[in-house]
Image (cartoon, rainbow, N blue to C red):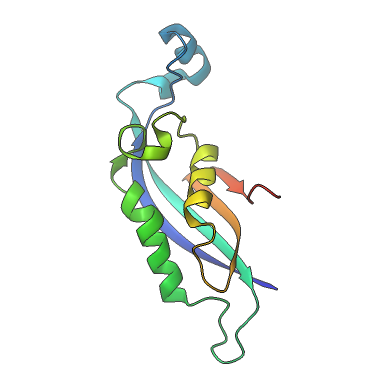
Length: 137
């Protein structure tokens, strides 16, 4: 098996807040990220798929198709959006880097022909990222 990784970028706003907690507890746990107006990031997404190399094309997956799937399933949904207010999976889930990685996995799992989703990596900043390898990992 060989692994192939494709990158995509999107910009989104979010805040960290648990609606069941008081303002004081949200501020104590999440600090300035609890600001209800939110803040933004320029995220980098890396999606790694695994599979066998097609002897005719030399590809694990059609690269244009993979790019189109990332655009349709992630970038067009997350880019220039406020995650808490505009993306359904974060209506009741705090959009941490970890939860974003899991949500993206769920959006992509089973949608990439001839390849198996191996890893979703989401960079919130150059020095902060989360990896998700699926439920069975």
